[in-house]
Length: 124
Image (cartoon, rainbow, N blue to C red):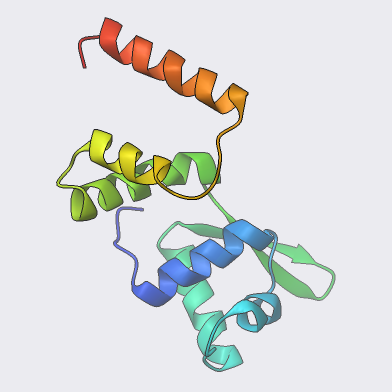
């Protein structure tokens, strides 16, 4: 599952994580400027072959599900973003996220403070 994903494959994976389980038709419907039905089916089958998706039969159709939970898949994706856009700096990435216009709840602030404290204890 170390195959890098193309832009379109990443788009499909994002849609699968939002919809799972998802059919070819539902994925295609959610895409901006979608390719043909058979092209979407081919993309999904490629993702199955790469190990990112699995299929399940529901009635007369197949639906697609991720092989890895979103929380597990998010780590390498975040690492790529931090590397590409923030010079590998977790702090720069965190500061950029905190500058967004979505207020943090008290619980989220407490969780962040605990994570910072753990990081200090571990010398990171």
